[in-house]
Image (cartoon, rainbow, N blue to C red; front, side, top):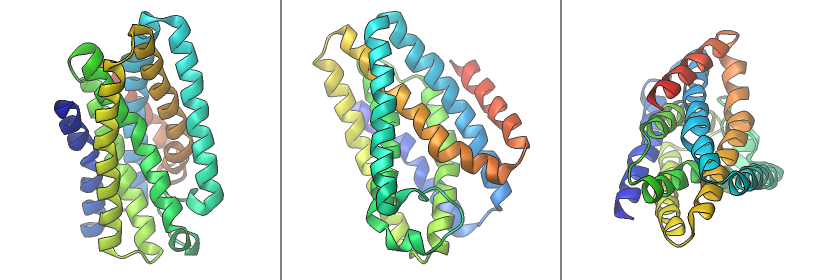
Amino acid sequence: MLEAGLWALLTAGSLWVGALVALLARPGSRVIGLAIAFGAGALIAAVAYELVFDAFETSVRFAAAGFAVGAFAFYLGDWLIDRRGGHSRKRMQGGGSLSEAAGAIVLGTVLDGIPESFVLGAALQTDGVVPVAVVIGVCASNVPESLSATTGLLQSGWSRARVLLMWTTVVAVSVIAAALGWLALDAIPAGGGAFALAFAGGALLVMLSDTLMPEAFEHGGREAGLLTALGFALGFGLS
């Protein structure tokens, strides 16, 4: 369990990296959009080959159920948070809506980080090792994700201390989610493990398509598709 928490700290800690780059360097929106596309592609490959494929090899029935439930669960949670004002949490353009919905912004950002951290703990329990493709995919998507969100939050009037506190909260919850993933799979049979891995895979795919890919194509332009393919190729190679 401790190892799962340390891996989650390493991967979720990449959110701090993106936030610090946004605070110190302020890269252009096109660069951030293309980086998001690359990270999303890498994470899609990790979901497909390290989570869903492995889950279906273990149990088709449990994996299919887990994938469907995970996708719907994230959709429902995201919908509820959007209704409270958290729908723009990853956008680079700040505005009054961001400053007025601090609670929803934090909750939504935490929700985005839970599935990927849960995967780390679950993978350690089932395979004894953390899949490299998942770690690289999460880090590659986390950095531009926090870059984009931090830029928007600063423009909306959030202070630097407040932004860093939010990302620290997300990292802490991610460590807890990884530990829970390890404990959950320690207590359930193999079929339940397939359900859990596929659940996380479904949730991650909805998260990518809802909060990251629109931002990537809006700011990265047509080349975002090429960067997504390149990221996917990297993730596939690591898998």
